[in-house]
Length: 273
Image 1: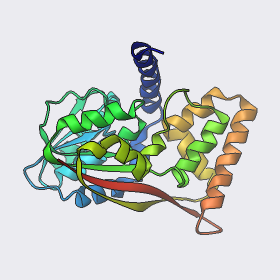
Image 2: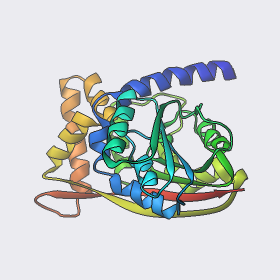
Image 3: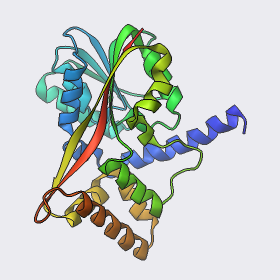
Image 4: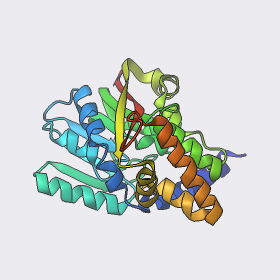
């Protein structure tokens, strides 16, 4: 396969992804994981007055977390509806925030402009991992900070994706987004330009009244799950719902009644040369 053909194939995949993330309402999902962005902004030691970029920002959890630190924050995403929601949140809080429509693999920003670049469960879904990482590096100033939060392959969300792809296989020729949740993969993407790296595994806990409510919630609001259910027939939907509920039961730490499901993610702070 030629490079041009490979890029064309990835463009098709990206267009499908964009449609997927525009379905459901990721803002509802994002409301349950606000803390991950606050912790990342704190770990990145953002300084008041800095220019900070949030890549694949969704409706702006990390963008707003950065702005609350006194920075000028810019969020970029390719789903217009999520950006509009972020703008409304920023106005409500009176924060210095700008939201732009843009592609993670072709960021509409100048070279070397940002003091810090963040991404929370966002850039990990770019089809071309190296191109996305290179764009983060390009946007960062020399000596800048990169902060990433990515679901781990062996954690609950990683296992949820495994269940979904057993029922609805993902596109061929695309590396798993969950690789971003491993230190080895991040080193392969950023190692050549990194002066220092700090990683820690954190836990985000999902809480629901029952495993069935968890399935309903993700099926209703989370684009990848919603789309998986839509392409299956009735028997397939029943089987997928059963397997996802079983996964939640397996991970539940309450063991009865309402469920509390710990999902691990990798928080990484990179200091660039």
